[in-house]
Image (cartoon, rainbow, N blue to C red):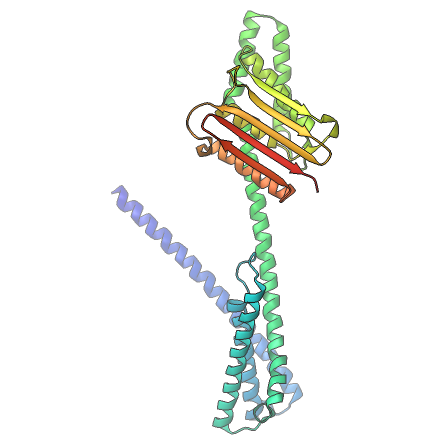
Length: 366
């Protein structure tokens, strides 16, 4: 019964999607028809002002209808066949041969239409008798409709590019919020509060005060709003990680081995927020930090034009970190934010040999 109900629900959903698509297409078709009716009426009125007998003289009316039909056909040929559909793939050679082919076909159709109408109704317009006049008038006609098509394509392309940018920004925000959410680890907070409680019972107030202050600073840094997405000082991010290290040392009673090597702190380089912290969080979640022989290593080297980050940790178990959802979110966030700020001016490498996991990031200033 449940499977039948599920099939019925899926069928209804598919039907609704098709109905919505058909409605959208119908609206687009009606909109196009309405625009062309208005345009043709305007062109007819312009002809009537230029030639008072345009609606009486069959020659002029026939020629006008053939020209408008040819121009409209050329317009849709450009939109549907010549101009690229995808906004990121404009190939000049392909565009030129398609344009030439479309122009030849539409010119030939216009010529055939005019000759057929001349044969049937017997009119002798210069468009029929004078080949040079035919090509000159055709050039004006197809240039005009080509400009219309190019403008429509350009504005549609700009709209699609804007939509892609908004979608990318939305994806970045989602990833950023996911990373922020992952930072505020409930287990970490719970264990830290347990540490405070146990210290309050068994020892003294000095460790409790130090732990509370560290936890307060860490939570303040994690919860602060970074709406601007502006890069922050590498030294500030390192200071935050050092506080996390100190708190973890207290939490694990010294059985915590994490070495930080920072070189060139005087250069005050900047980096997008959360990148260093994401590396740190991934090492804590998926790495071994209680083995004194293989401590987690974070090496940050700053220079005037280059920032290098090296992270190495022993893998906690044989399961690949790449398959974990939390790791994948952080990895996608880092790539998106680096692409946004540095484009091709960075190198990000991951290496997993089954025993150690290594991350190398090199950022070069322009």
